[in-house]
Each structure stands twice: as structure tokens, then as C-alpha cells.
Amino acid sequence: MVSLIPSTQSLLYNHMSFFTDLRSFSDPVFCQTKNSVYDYLCENKRFLKFKKMIEKADAVPFYNESKLTLFIIEDCFLENLNIEKEDINSCRKILNSLTLKTVLTKEYLKSSPLSFFSNKMGDRILVENSNNETFLNNSNVIKEFDINLQNGVIHVIKPI
Image (tube, rainbow, N blue to C red; front, side, top):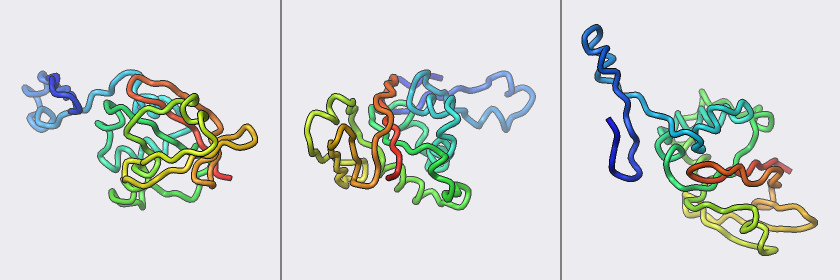
């Protein structure tokens, strides 16, 4: 079954299982949009904690379909973060603080020495360009720009 309404998640049903197992027929499986932000995280082992966080926060449809910018930290810098111990609200808070509901490329982020953008929670994110580096909230540096995907862009950040 395919959804025709924007910003909803398409569902894939296994109709053949209806004849052998009624439980699996009633459980929909989310289709992964090819080359989406979520698809990229599923395929890239550097960001497994963020992928798990998205799943735990029930945010797969958003990162699969919505237009967005995600500032993401590699797993190697998140050694102390145990996703299994985080609850759904803390996962959502972390994701929302690093997500913008618009697509911002390197060109736009570097166009001014100092800019503010609103994240998904409505809080301001400070972007500062200094000494050929781009800083995020004075605590992270963008080390990899413009991983361009079908529904948005990812910028990889590194804690200072």
C-alpha cells in the first residue's frame, strides 16, 4: 500500500503471510526511501547510534521523507552515550536539537561570519565562520559538509 498524502510513511504489507500467519499480516513494515537521510544512516557504519536513536524516537518517517538538515556526530565521539538506556523523549530531544526543518548547504552556512538558525525544537543554533573553519554553537566544528541526499543534507560535526 502506498500513501498518496505528503509527509506520511508508505507501508509495505506481506499479503502472502495472511495465509500462514495472521500476526505478521497485521504488522506493517516501513519502506525505506532510497538515498534518504535515514537510508544513508542505515548504510553508513559511522552513525549507528544516530540510526538507533531515530528508531527509538519513532522518527523514521521524518528522517525518511521530510526536507531537513542534520548535524551529526560520528559514533567514535559518542562512546559514553548508551542508546539502550535513553528513553524516547531524550532521544527526540537530542535529534531535534541537531535537526533543521530546511535544507542548508555549505555555501549557505559559510555565506556569513555569524548566523543563527532555528532547530526543530525552536532553539537557536549559532553558526560561526572563523579561521577557515565553521563552528556550531561554539562547541563543535563541521568537519564534513554537504552529504547531499534525496530529502536533505547531512553535515558531520566533531566536538571541540
